[in-house]
Image: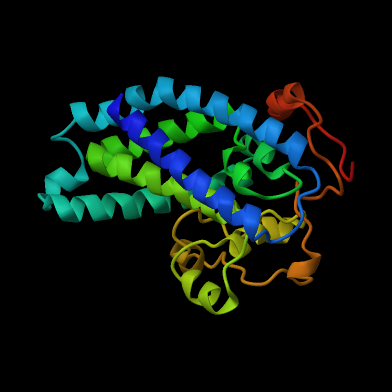
Length: 262
C-alpha cells in the first residue's frame, strides 16, 4: 500500500509539471487532443487498476519473500552496488522487452495501441493496453527473482520509468544546445518522437524509455528523422490516418485487423 501511494504521488507530481511545460511552451499544436485524452486517460485508469492488483503479487512480493535468492546475493555485493546494478539492468530489460514487442507479431498486436496515438503529449505515456502492462509486470517479476533485486530498487526503477516515459512523450522540446548533451544519456522528447513515426524504419529505432545508452550500444539509435523533423508524421507505422475511434475499439484492437493506409 505504501509503495503504491509513493508511485501515485510521484506520478501526479511529474505529470503536473510536464503538463505545465507542454501547455505553456508547446512543441506544436495538438488538434485531436479531446478524443486522444479520453482514450489515454481511460487506459490510465485500467492500467492503474492492473498495477494495483498485480504489482504487489508479482514484483514487490517476489523481492520481499525471496531475499536470499538471486545472482546479486550469491555474489555478495554491497547494497549500494546491488541497487545501482538493479536499476541499470531493469532499464536494459525494458529496452529489450520493447524491441521484442515490436518484432513478435502477437506482441506487436498488443503494443500497436501505443503507436496508434496520432499525436504525442504527456498523456501518450499512459496509452498501453492492460494486457501489455500485465505481461511487462511478469517479465520484470522474473528478473527480480532471478537477480535478487531488492524491493527498494524495484520501487525506484518504476518511479524512474514512469517519469521518464512521461517526459519523453511530452509535447515540448529542450533547447538545442541542451538537447545534444541530454540525449547522450537520457531519452528526450525529440528522440522518442522518431520512434513514433509512421515509417517502419524509424519506428523500429530509439527503443529506450529512460537511458539512451542502450540504443547507442545496440546500434538502434536514430538522431534525425529520414525526411527531417518537421515532416515527421506521428502514428501507427504503415498507415496514413488510422487511429481507434472509440474506447471499445481501443480495447479490442489487439484482437482485430485493420486495413493499411486507412
